[in-house]
Each structure stands twice: as structure tokens, then as C-alpha cells.
Picture (cartoon, helix red, strand yellow):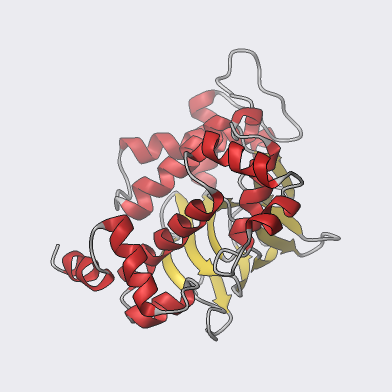
Length: 305
């Protein structure tokens, strides 16, 4: 990503799948600035933040974030968000094979607007965003963060009533679930414990899959890392996803193939290699079975839209 006077992000050059940048989006002029990317497992980045920021991973991505002045890196997954004060330096590293990561940067004006809207003490609100810490995402914070990313990144809605509401809600919810402040009984603040409806076995399995998404993973190996038996793993995958672990892994790889096809930078053969297929014909066959189209036809149809 290119730097601006406000914020700078650098990444390592691509080498094979290392440094692979699938998608990226950057807007630092809005009340809630956004830096978003989907990248490969060898991605590393460094940021100097002029605004306080919320750093979080999406889906089942895992990110290591080292903040200047802290003793050890923070590991961010689907349940955690990192608050970083203005002026802090952050080093980011992808852990999973594909990492979705976003940085939300609220302006001082947005923080003050949120305080006025929800009658929050300004000094206390600024204090929440003035200290490096991780918070556990509630269902509500998780929902509004993902909705804002959809509105801004995917739908291209930079400023409207929906985005304005989501931005102030994210700031407010962050305030209430910070270490220093507890939500009152009148605040809509769902417990994060329900964010995963699946059992811990599934979470361990998904983390392992995402870390090695483009590598060969056997059922026995996956069961060992999920700390369960093969039979139990098959049963819980069928219950949660209505498919086997092998089918789940195939679908996840093909999901990432769609993003690479949209990127237009990579040939069909390169995409096949990136997502772990031994032959292009095997990739084309799997893609056709899932999406009822060849990869090239799917790409051409997108280009003509």
C-alpha cells in the first residue's frame, strides 16, 4: 500500500505466495479511516498511526501485532481487537495462509461526536483510545465492524446515514467493553461467548486449517491438532457445516480463488498453484463443480459486468 502523510503501510515484496496481496483498500480522509487488506501468509507490514486505531482480523485469520513500547506481540483472531493510541508504531505479520486485516482510525471529531451523541464523558472516551490494549469482541461489535467494512469497502458507500451510525456505534461499543469501563444493564451489549456457536474442537480445527490452507492436510493430522478423534471431528463438522473437513478445505481454497480471479494479476495456472492444486486441470474441475463455470469464463463474465 502506498503511504500518505497521515499513515504509512509497507509490505514485503512478493516471492511465490509470500507477500501476496489479494485485495486492498485505503481511505484515511474519512471520520473513520480504514486500511483493509487480504494478504498471503508471508505478509509483514509496519504502520505509524497518527490517529488512535482499532486493529482486527476478519473471518478465521490470525495476525501477530507488535506495538512499540510493549513487551510481546499481540495475537489477533476472530474474537479480539487491538486498540493502539495515536503515534504508536505497529508491526504486523500474517500467521494464517490468507489473512484479512483491517485498521479503523477514528478522528478526534468522530470521538467527540460519539461522546455527544451517547452522552459519554469525553475525557474517559479519549482515555480508552489512549492506551494499548486488546478487547474481546461482543457479537454486536463484531456485527457492526463487518457491516462497516461491507458498506465502505465492498459497496463503496463512503458517507451516508448507515455508515455514520456504524462509525459512532463502533466507538461507543469499544468504550463500553474496554478494560476500564463496564456496560450498564441498559446498553445493548451481547456477550462475546456466543460469537462462536461451534465447539472448541471446531475453533482449533479452523485455526489449523487457515494457517495451512494451501498445504495438504490429512484428517488424522487435523484431528490431532483439534485434540479430538477423527470420528468426533467428522461428526462436529457435519453438524456445524454440513460437510466433511476435506470438503470444507476445498471450498475455502476455491473461495480464495475467486478473490484471486477478481485481482486479474494472476493467470489461471498461477492461481491453481497458489491455492495448492497439483495440476491446473484438477483446479478447473473443482472450480466447475463448485461454481458451474470455468475459472476463465468466470473472470471474463466479471470483466464484462
